[in-house]
Structure formats: structure tokens, C-alpha cells
Length: 337
Ligand code: PEP
Ligand code: MN
Image (tube, rainbow, N blue to C red):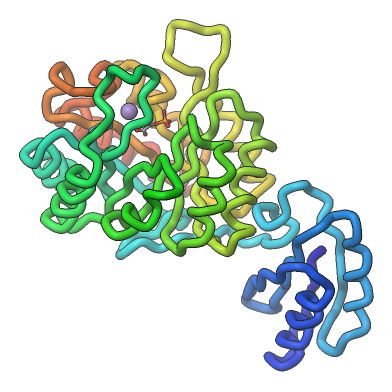
């Protein structure tokens, strides 16, 4: 249920509503708006109509059921777009945010060189995996804690926030010590224990779409994070499994249009994992921006042919530089629409 407060409702009246929601066994999530505040009351769906009684409290304008199964992620609860601030970078704002870096942190020179170069070329956030969820147990699994240390160091040198994947609920606190943004990968997008755990911290979370997930299921995964109290969720479309084999996955750009209707959360696109081939990355990056993506996540490696993982889809520095330059043509047009 959404409890809509009157524009003139006082802080005291808001507090009273919050405690009544808790008394009834529901969890209140206050969303502070510019003209009025609303409270999302989430919990057991079966008895939710008991919350209707809150309508008689002072300061309450209306109590409205949320029809969507995802509550806090839905626009029914919050109409304004969520803008997530990480350092000087705003995700979900006017600017298209570029996240760039290697699939995996491999060594100090690789990550520092990449950080400095992509920053110079216009990237806003540095990426790099320290814990890699690989399809084969024999593939490079990442440098673990050492990878986190190197990523953080590279981010500090290049003055960029950093994002890295967390694959295990037990690693969440450790990863939070080093990363500015946590990433949940496609293979863990329905690992509900992990989702709940990252919901209990306040670092922003990039939630990748599960490779076989519907948009609704994806938003339900976001709901797991939001309902634990972490409001800073960024959705990342990274391609889904289809019958097509010419690309690694199929980039579902229509998901951006659907998500813009359904949710207030920022949506970014990863054309690297979506296509699997460096040569297809730029055109899909431009298309994503034209479709309204709030940002891009792009794999960049100093020597893609020598990368420990995902070399074929990684851009080298000069291709990345060209992509960023060309992207400006698209961002300038999109802003005018
Ligand atoms: C990644 O971004 O490094 C990654 C493993 O991506 P995905 O989970 O989308 O495959
Ligand atoms: Mn990768």
C-alpha cells in the first residue's frame, strides 16, 4: 500500500503514520517528495487491507493499493526518477554515465593504466572484477582481495569511483570496504540471499539482468534489495539468452523502454556482455543511448588479445576513445528530445 501524506502534513504526523504501519506488522519506506511525502508499506500481501484504516489519521490524504508485484521499484510508489550519487557522478541524471574497465583486474599495471586512460577519454566510473563467476571452474577466477586492493588504488589514482562484482553474501562487507558500487552479476540475479545481503548495506548496487529473466522477475530481484532498505539500485541490461548464436547474448533494448514506464530506477546497458564481440559494441552503445539508457558499462583492456577473460568483447584504448567521441553526437540529440 502507498500512504500518501497531505502536502501540509507535519513531521509529527508522518512519524505517527510510520509507527502505526509498524504496529500493524508492515515495513514503512518513506519517499520524500518535493510537494508531498509518501510511505510505501510493504509486507504480507494477504492482510494488506488492514492498512486502509490509516486513512483516518491526521495528515494522511489517501491509502492506495500498489497493484504491481514489485512495490518499491514501481512508479506507483515513486514517480520521480531516482538519481544515485556516487562521489561526483550522478547516475540517472541528465548525463549518460560511462563505466569502463577490464572484465577482471589482472595486475597493478593493467588496472592503473586502464583507469588513467579511460578517465582521460571520458569515463566516469572504473570497473574491474576481483571475484569472477566463471562458467568453467578451470577459468581464471579473479585475484580476490588483491584484486579489490588494486582496483581501489587505481580508482584513487585516476579519481574515479569503482564498481566490482560480489558473488557471495559473506564477501559483502569486504567488498564494501573497497568498492563504491557493488555489482550483482547475471548468474546471481536471483540469488535471493545475496540480494537481501546487499540490501542491508548502503552502497549502490548495479543489478544485472539474469540471462533468462523476464523484466518482471528482474524488478522482483530489485525489490529484494529495496525492501531490505537499500534504495540505490541501478538496473543493467546485458543481453538475454535467445536462439541466436551470432552474438553471445541478445541485447534487449526494448527493456529500456519498458523499464522507463515501470520503474523510477536508473537503467544502464552493457553492450560488451550483450554482444560478445568488440566490433558490435559501439553500435549497440549508441543504440542504447538513443533508447534512453542512463549509462553504459563497457569492457576495455590495454591488450584485449592477452586478456585473462572476455578479451574478444573488450575494446582497446583507441576503439574506446572513438566510441566516447561518437557517443557525444548521440547524447546531444537525445538531450533535445
Ligand atoms: C561482468 O560484468 O564482469 C560480468 C560477469 O557480467 P555478467 O554478469 O553480465 O555476465
Ligand atoms: Mn566480462
